[in-house]
Length: 215
Image 1 (cartoon, one colour):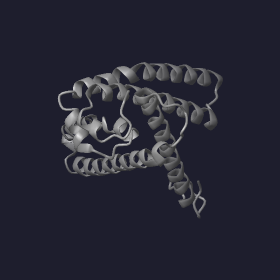
Image 2 (cartoon, helix red, strand yellow):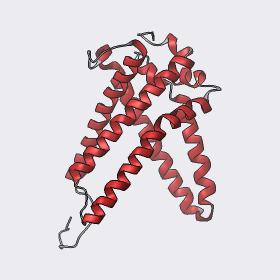
Image 3 (cartoon, helix red, strand yellow):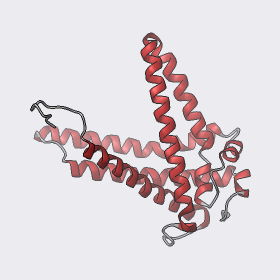
């Protein structure tokens, strides 16, 4: 994009920023609907209808958690940037523990998603208690579930990249967007299905808060 003087600038315009924000919110809603439907299909055998179960309450709570995680990631990123800037020589020492703790907390709270899909409020304490002693199991199931998809997507990306490089072409925006959307959709289905299985196995306190009990 060119600025007022004709020089090329990378500063996004307000219109582009609003477009990106709107696209992110829309994606969050669509992915939230898909996640909730997969949870409810796996746990209670619910079909496509209703598209927004329980009058949309699970979707609202899912988006609340999604925004909370996004905000916490932003805060952590800013804190890390400031810390590393002040002590650049200790960047690895600062980064690794913070990332490990952040992943640990997200893993301990992950059982809240299936509970929300079944009508629970955002019961973080119950999710934390139910995951006690099962962190490695939850984390390991997630890695095993996602790894094949990641390997396939990496191989596909390499093959497509080599093909376009040989032809002197670049994949178009439409192709890239479609590929990313498909990857995200499959990733969400795998994540929700595996988390539903973990919820069925480990949920205890959370069962008291849901409106639709698992079958």
